[in-house]
Length: 248
Image (cartoon, rainbow, N blue to C red):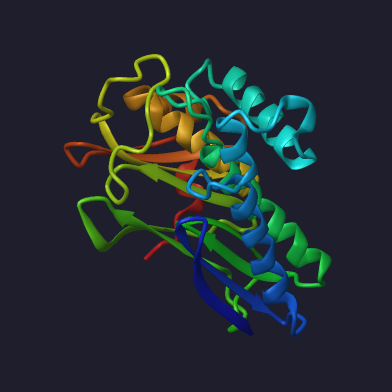
């Protein structure tokens, strides 16, 4: 087993590989570093920062940047405008789609390196496959947003992606594009299980921006399940969410 944890892209990233080549971790973390170098809005030399400063025109975008812009627009349309990479101040910040996309690509990279059992966690958004070092299926705990060290649900994703959006750790970093100045206070977290972490992450972000309607959006979304906790501590889940819950 090979495992390590470090901070990249402004968040902790943990990778656990079972039966992987010796250099696999370095390759995967180098990939995350390259994503951060291109898409970080905190690095003045990154491509996205240079785009925001008017130093790079659309015809000079990298292939990765073009892909992210296209994916962001598709997600905006799929969520009735509740997902946007343009902040109220006009700054383009693709973080809401880049994280899941990067984790998904890192998982594909692990598989290309011959690793069929892995667990990749970036800022609490997770893609796993196979089993852990003890040959047991990977499980993921959903935190109590009011008591961060308490686990309120344990899910077994079985190869699917698991993403959580909320304000309880990072504060108000998500906004409703239809009401940019409004505080999102109806729900404090929403966890989405989807076919892969890319889809789970982008739809979790949009669902959180929808407030109480977010869990209804996930309910109607094919192949996705969700678990939301509101400001009063009341949990609501989609009809199929229980199939992912580990009985304790």
